[in-house]
Length: 126
Image (cartoon, rainbow, N blue to C red):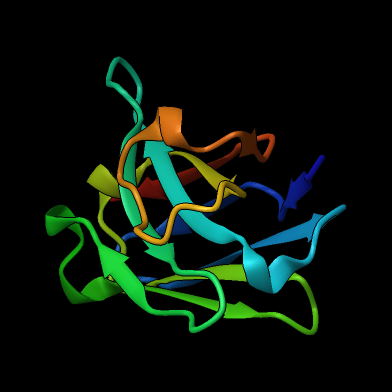
């Protein structure tokens, strides 16, 4: 079992920055693929980024470009998502997710992740 607790929701202005955090417990954190997804109103949940277990190698969605950075601190059992130059279209519920299976390759598919954070709202005002 893995429990994921995300930082609180935020209301930010367009052009600003924020950092999301997600603290994991219940499993050796370094051995888990950790990802971020988001879901905008009326849309499906979409992949944002993933940090691979052990070496922290990162993969990003094409939609992300270089405004998003995923990182992890294994000592703190925490994964982060830094978002810069926020846009109104970044408004969504953001979720962290954990893949604890033995697969080596990371996934962009929500169903491949067994554990999810509670989801927190990020609203970007124009």
